[in-house]
Length: 142
Image (cartoon, rainbow, N blue to C red; front, top):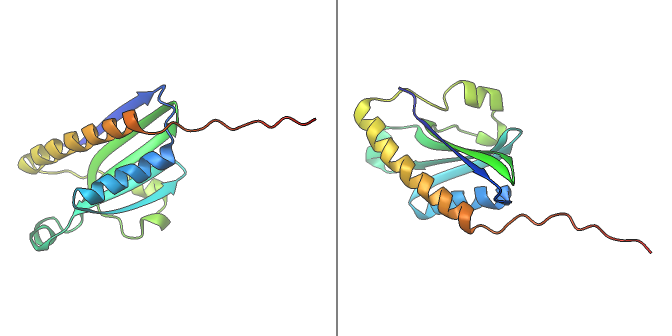
C-alpha cells in the first residue's frame, strides 16, 4: 500500500517560501535531519530520524513533504520515501516517479500514518499562524 497524505489550503495568502522554512525548522526541532530545495513543482522538504538503530533498520527512509501551488491555493503532500542524496540536483520527474513513495509493511505503515498525522497537524498550525505574503506594492509616478 502506498501512503500519501494530501492537504489543501485555500484563501490563506501564505508565504510559501517562509512556510517551507518553518516546516523544515520544526522538523529539526522535533529531532529530524532535514534537507530542502525549491523545484519547478514547488518546495520539497525531506526529514528523517537519525540514530544507529534507525540506520540499521531504515537506512534511507524519510518523510517527504511537497508544497505546491500559489499563496491562496496550495497543497501539501506528505509521504514516506527514500532519503534523496543531493536533493538540490535531482530532476523533479525522477524524484516523483521513482522512489518518493515506497511500499511499506503494515506495522510500519501504521506508525508512519501516526507520525504523518502529527506532521499534518504541525503544518496546519504553521499555515494558520504564518504571516501572509505581502502583495507587490505599486509605486505612483508624478
